[in-house]
Image 1: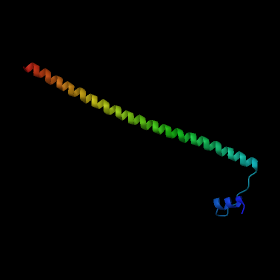
Image 2 (image 1 turned 180 degrees about the vertical axis):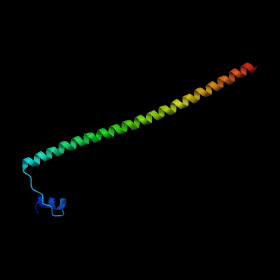
Image 3 (image 1 turned 90 degrees about the vertical axis):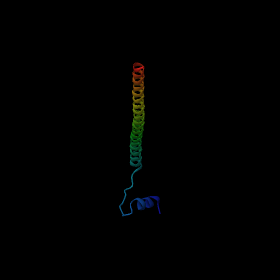
Length: 92
């Protein structure tokens, strides 16, 4: 069996005939495929990079929000302690 016959039977088991290409057409189509695959892979990589960047920004943002709320609570606690201290001094 020839390689073309094996490939055509493997890729087209339903008896579809594939026309052979000339060398120039094969080179042209191969170059187009490689170019499009490269463009697609660059686009996919950019999507992955942007997704991970946004995920890390969101994690940093939530960490900052948590730290900010802890600091606000600490300020409230210190203010309450201050008020209690002033009240204690005034009552003495």
